Image 1 (cartoon, rainbow, N blue to C red):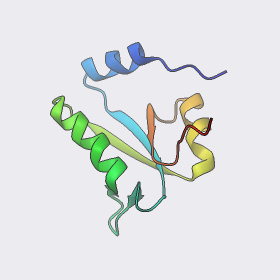
Image 2: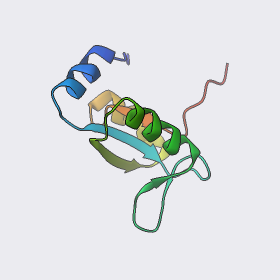
Image 3: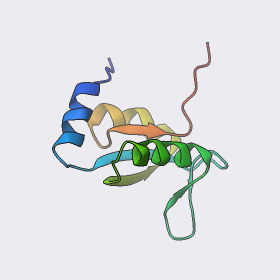
Image 4: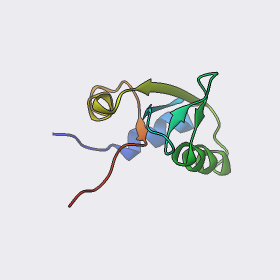
Length: 88
């Protein structure tokens, strides 16, 4: 079962380590530009919130949609943007 561990992420932020953000290529929500930088309004919101919190040490991990949950579960990245929705 998957569990979110907010404490681990805040500890990671406090230690100065990068936050690894996984995102799937899903235009217009989250997608890489021609240089591989994250764009789209979901990425803009995510990166904007982190910046407002004073944190810009971010590592982007591009994956396909099917890799978002497994990437979170395996620790490949700390959070995911784009492509995740509540359906019920």
